[in-house]
Length: 332
Image (cartoon, rainbow, N blue to C red; front, side, top):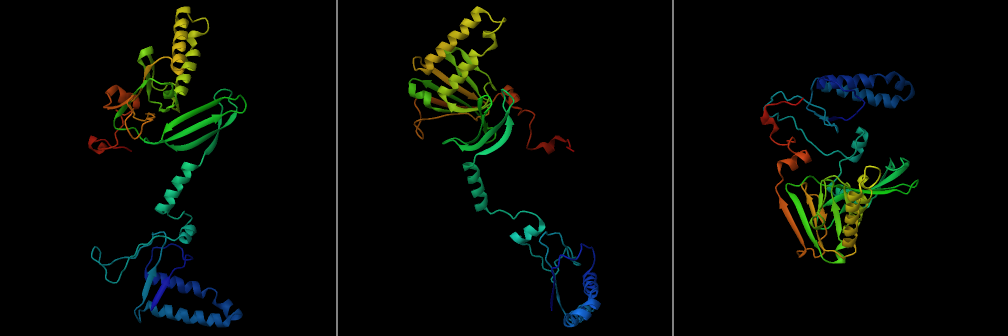
């Protein structure tokens, strides 16, 4: 005889099989007086079933007892442990969507569902509320995951303020810090080089040796733009330099900065050839190779081991993700 107990109406309990059968008998007996008056046929059938349950307690014949728990939190004792119990079979299975819904959890997603979710994220523009960095008025920031060809995925965030018209864009790397730093050198020889795409991460330094110019790590933040757009951002940064304005400025310093701005404009107009250098210790910056997948004769990409000072700036020297158990320190 097979006796399946699959009723979630029985409350959790630490008991025996006999105890569970007794609880089932008591539960069926509760409404029997009412059933005999209203539904005598049903009451008679339930009484017959109660008699069968009572015979099971005496084990008059062999029967099968089944515990089916979608949560996986039920247990039947194996009296022969750690040896195998020949009378006990434990089967693990994946929950159905209906069982997951009854438990109040989401059903496990298949690999196809996960792939579809990632594709939807790439095609979707997410939006969240923020404040304008210029006038502090409420604004919206759009965020999108973008795959850069021959590189990696990045997250682009753009804010447009309707109140003052201020616009910003910021780029976050979609991946981790690379094992090696990257130094990209482009010899700008043609005005068409101004249209090359550039991903400048927050950890990247920019150098123009011919102009004796260096832009430090963190300046201008992360940007995904063109070479022309980045040079214009640098030009704007120079023009808004506080040393060229106000009472603290000197004529010599102001003249030098203005001269630099004019040379930078000559580069943008294609009148001056330079070497443009992106040096990113984190390896998360990118400069478009217009000859890809072939090598670009005007561009050189070097990978190098980071120095201690560079790892210190990136916060890697104090970061340990492997073998920390060997230090003899316990983390609580």
